[in-house]
Every structure is written in structure tokens, then in C-alpha cells.
Image (cartoon, rainbow, N blue to C red; front, side, top):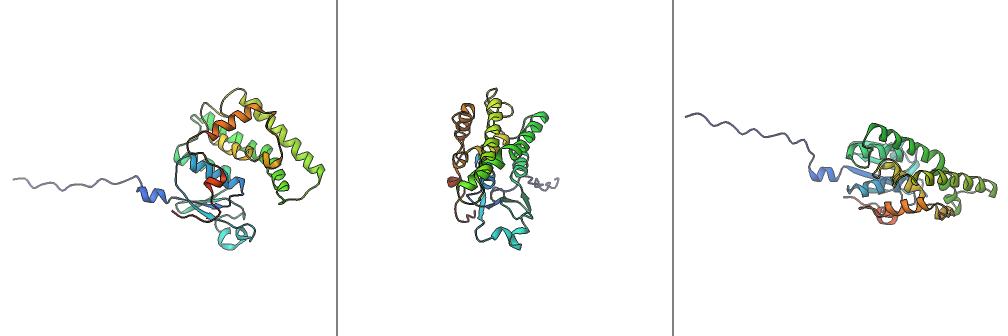
Length: 229
């Protein structure tokens, strides 16, 4: 009689659901557009995450324990396992690559996505978010500078309007992190006192994103207090 072979257990390569659930912790504040950018991406990916509220008014983002997470003293910072990532556009790229969602489907699409994310911060984010900060009392500058930012923001929206006249999404046939990153700035145009009426394609595109499963506003995604899973 032959001896029975011992059962060989197969290695588990996929992380446990509990471990995967606790993978991400987002540090930031609900009022921060870049923090919302990352929160929206995680929400659209249907991936749970812990959230640590960083009190900017009390200067928590400049304290040594936070600077270990984000050397620039800014929000957001995202913990993924044992590493911290900073700068919302870079975080979007990391999440798209690691979660395999909202990434470009071809090498050329991924290049185009990156181009649009760079364009966003160069041409759109700066004027819109500066105007928003002024109108909320967080920044002070005169009418001449306000007019300059208003002109720059509208020029960027005109570029976006032209692009969206050709396609439902900014790159390819499906939404990507280019759409998520740019949307997270465009949504603040009312707070910057910029009317989107002259940009109907932008307005329609904005509604398409708001209809995506998992979409939420900053108030829905980012609480005012920390939330741990």
C-alpha cells in the first residue's frame, strides 16, 4: 500500500480582503481641491479608504509628524501600504496603474493622459483655484491680478471646450484620470465666479462624470473629521 501524498497548500498571492480594505489612508481636508481629486478617484474605483483630517488652520501640515508623510507640507498625502505618495496628479497615475482603472488603454493614450494632467496644473488649476481662494477670503490680491487669472482660466476652458467637441471624454472612448483630475478643478468654477454657460461641451461632460457610479461631492466623500476603517 502506497503512502498517501501530503496535501500541498497553494500560496495565496492575492491580499486578504481585510488587508486590501485597509490599504489606503488619505490625509487631507475637505476644502482642498487636490484632496478631493484623490478622494474622488478612490470613490469612483469603489475602493474603501481611511481618511485623516489635516487641520490647515492649526498648521498641522507643517508639523514634523506630517512632514514625514508629505515633505512639501501640503495636502494631500496618500498612504499605500508602507509608502506615502504626494502631489495629486502623481497619486492619480499611481492609483490608475495599481488598481487598473481609469488608465489609458494604450501606451499612446497613457501619454495623452499625462499631457492633460500636466496641462491642467499649468493652465487651469492655478487661475481657478487662486480665484476660488480669493473669493473665500484665503488669498488677497487686487482687481488687476483677479482679471489676469479670470482671463487665463477662461482661455483654458476654451481649450477644453474645443477638445470635448470632438469626444465625450478627454482621452479615448472612456473616462480616465485626465477627466477626474480636470473635473476636480472645473467643479470649483462657481466658487471662482466663472460662468460655464459659454462652454456647453464642458458642462455636458461635467454631467457625464457626475453620473458615473461611485461619484460623490467633497462633502459626501471627505468628512470634516478623521474616519478609520
